Image 1 (cartoon, rainbow, N blue to C red):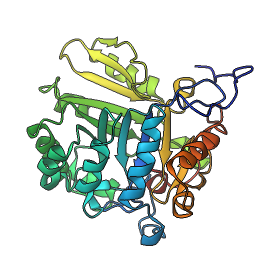
Image 2: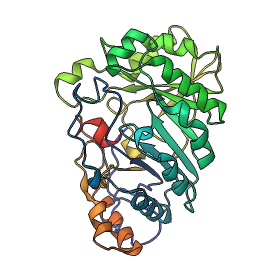
Image 3: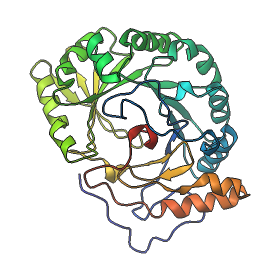
Image 4: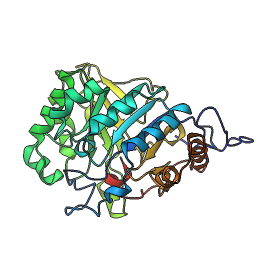
Length: 336
């Protein structure tokens, strides 16, 4: 897929849809509520963790709600809460309630490691959370513990079941495939969930290199599909406009859907419709670029809603056409 070109004559709008210079309409916001996580996944952060953001630097729930309202007024309809791990932030149900009640927001979801989700599932569903994505890179207990540096795959599977029990379906499972670490889990993951084709979608995500050395561990999505096609008949499912970066295929033998998110070999920059808000208020318009100055300071400086909207529009106007290889920042602080 080619990168988009700037639209000749297009001026930065002061009203209407949230546009960038390439004419892409942004309807999806990923919001990190914390950089902290109860796992230490090997591809995400160092074993000792990171220098966590001071609590005072984090956006309050009221500030997040104001930003969401501003985004909604410009046409954002989907919000996904991320981290770090969102379920470890205190009173996360309150934030879900605020966002779910925001006029214009039609879809509210969360990406979680699932470790704590079972105990929050009912309250989050009642508050308005509609769907979850769960990170699960292997079904092997020992390998899971090694990759997450202490995680419990049985608790994650329990979180998936709890989400389905309260009506949050289908659940999408995110597996980051890394050569030599968990690339032997592709077929077992598909087979394990074959009996719940309507409830669970397994998605394979290309490992994103943050260093040149990381490139050696990258497994292309095409290679993953080829392996599955040796066992199953795969039929592509039409891409849903605005539906996110995943490309979905149907396994004819089981009715399952499997997804592929390929930021490296089959990048989706041309149809990018998302912005990312980091937990400290920094706006990131592309994973491969450093975050823009924090909206936290705009809010705490006394800006009204109209001023906030124009700041967001101005910053999005600096969005690049797409990424060019390596990415900037640790994933737990970027927000996924």
